[in-house]
Image: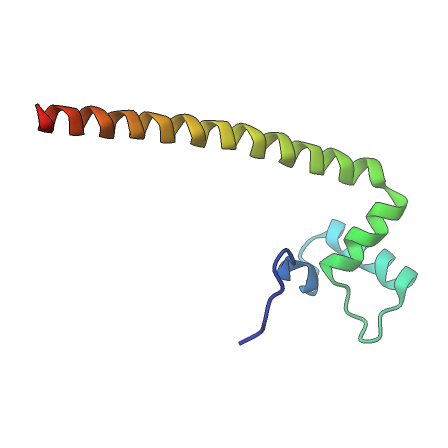
Length: 96
């Protein structure tokens, strides 16, 4: 079994397959730019080149993901508080 470091996304090591014209264009560009040993372009390579050459795209994606995560965290907190209250009310009724 492969060991995964905490905080490291194993998807970044995945080799990108050419499933669409856009992927083909991006993979060819990254391959020409970085010239990887095995002619295999990984997600990590794409992220690094986009960060250097198109940071506003990655920032928009990162910000959107952060905002969605933030909203989801609050929804989870509200649901947890609701379940806790229901559990407390149920316990109170059983003890009465």
